[in-house]
Length: 225
Image 1 (cartoon, helix red, strand yellow):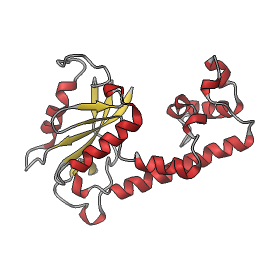
Image 2 (tube, helix red, strand yellow):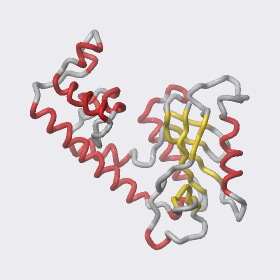
Image 3 (cartoon, rainbow, N blue to C red):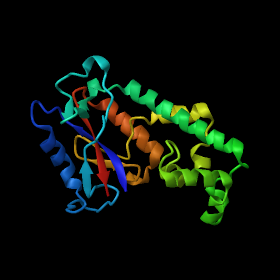
Image 4 (spheres, one colour):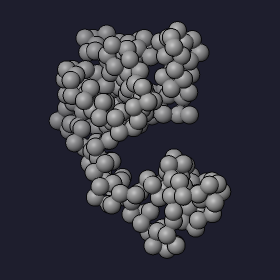
């Protein structure tokens, strides 16, 4: 499984970024896990920094020296909270959501109504529905912008169940949320933490962000577990 973790770090004050990030992630190395009890949802067996900009920056602050860029192309790997353009993150998530919802609406118009997975006893019965078949075939090609395996596994009927406006609003609200986040005091938190579920995870991560000083460094890390 590959997923994104948001790592919050204190302001570096001139200290190098890479050692600070590695030190923060080290306790959750699944190959050398020292925490008790063991939580397989809290950890990684490998991680990398992003190959494209991880966070959008406010236009007038893009040259700020506090931004961590990766050579040789200057990809933004981390930035202080005060420089991150959260409005653009929400807008971009809304644009992506609108495209995805419209793509599903087009599928729905061309096939008989599809029922959610919970309606069926067997997964195979659910998959036989023409609308689901179209999404599945698109996912297999890995060429469709919106119909990925994650959408298929989430059950498109349920995933796109909200009306268009509600679906876009929900995506915008979740724009900053990642599968996991690592707090300043070293807590690794996901939707599986205390079985809190995705919606509570979104609210908790958003609330935590609001409490952080503006100079807190935000990094996005691609993890595998």
